[in-house]
Every structure is written in structure tokens, then in C-alpha cells.
Length: 88
Image (cartoon, rainbow, N blue to C red; front, top):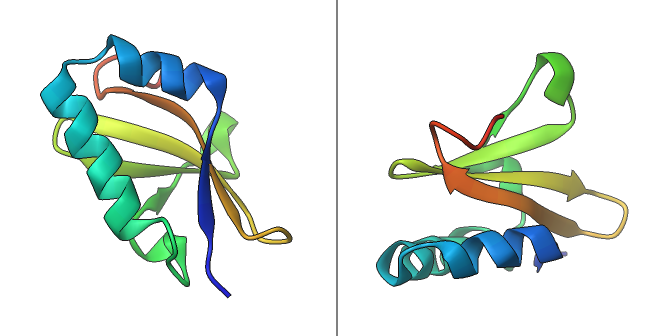
């Protein structure tokens, strides 16, 4: 039982707007660590307050915000951005 990664249209749009080097770094990290993993919670941190249920992954100065759906074994990437603006 391994998880697969799905991107929302918003996340894909944010990736296209990024620098190509940073975008490839983030997508390769997601492919290595999250896609096909047994437990995606090992690599990230659970968010709190008004973002309960969301998980964040740190890749350099960028953050990947995800929802982990255990019933269908999906990690849904819904936002990607620089750490100074991703939580706004």
C-alpha cells in the first residue's frame, strides 16, 4: 500500500510560474519522497490552528502544502510557494 501524489490545478499553475530550477527541484523531491511512499507523514509536519488537517513539506525556502487522504491513499498537493508567502 503506497501513496500516490496528485496536484491541483492551482499547484500546477504555481509551479509553472516558478523558476525552472526551483520547480524541477520541488517536483523531483516530491517524486523521490512522497510518490510511492508508505507513510508521507514521516517527511512533513502537521499544521495547526486554522489549517488543521493540512501538512507541510519543506524544500529549501519553499513549502509544499498537502492534504493526506488515507482512505484512497492520495497525497494531494494544493499549494506550492516561497515560505514568506505560502501561508497567506
